[in-house]
Image (spheres, rainbow, N blue to C red):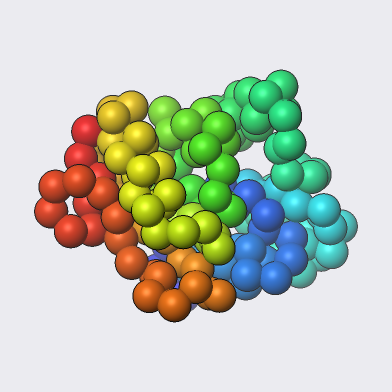
Amino acid sequence: MTRYGDRKAVVIGGTGGLGLAVSKRLVEGGAKILLTGHAPARAAAELGSCAQVIGPDPADPAAVAALALTVEIELGRIDYLFLPTGRSTALALLPALKDGGAVVFTTSRTLPALRALAAELAAHGARGIRVNAVAPDCPGAGRRFGPGRAGAVRG
């Protein structure tokens, strides 16, 4: 299957749970991915050579900056960014997203907080980048947020 054959993605929290499921789907579809998480050996064994596992999720500004540099070196421009809600990580990796790329947050945060974060990403020059939120434990979630037409965050 080559649904994501020429695509590149970063998955924060990609070594377990929903993040690992997303990572598997991307790899099965042919994407090249870089992921973080607390079970790197397990994820590397399950995902193979199309996935680069680089250790725990970034927790401080220095780790976020190091991750952004690693993404730039290893992948260059990316198509997808999948992460738990994390303002600093999203803003640090936003420049790596290709025009028309997508950010997917998994969260249990309130919907107004997600709207504010989407608007902030748009204000930082998101070039037609879609911002989506998936909140498995939050009724009414799984929607796209952002100013302008529904589903797109315009910069």
